[in-house]
Length: 142
Image (cartoon, rainbow, N blue to C red; front, side, top):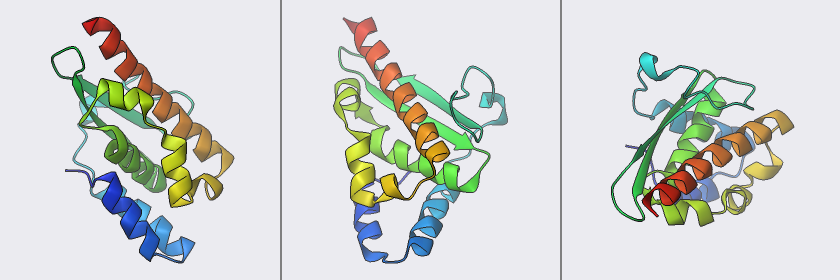
């Protein structure tokens, strides 16, 4: 079970040092559920990430389905960023996912100014993939 985004934001507020914050993000990645090797394939790979990132999407039923995401990366810090995105988006309704502003949450955490441009681009690629899958789920149910 991934942490929820509100508790992550609260925890971040207690960490003054960026070294501690990076360690916390890495720990979030360590707590991700096991991601099967069989799912680490080209279909699930997120393009635009320097590190390898894989995401799977499970869409529930209904006009505004709940969507569960799972993910993994081969890099520790990026695995933590995957955990952040899962905390932000997984288990929410498709309509909520397409309107959730990841940039605003990352700004609250201060991550927007502490990630390398490559990691920021990779994070943006993850968010775009998640939002695209949610939009597709809404379109299919319409």
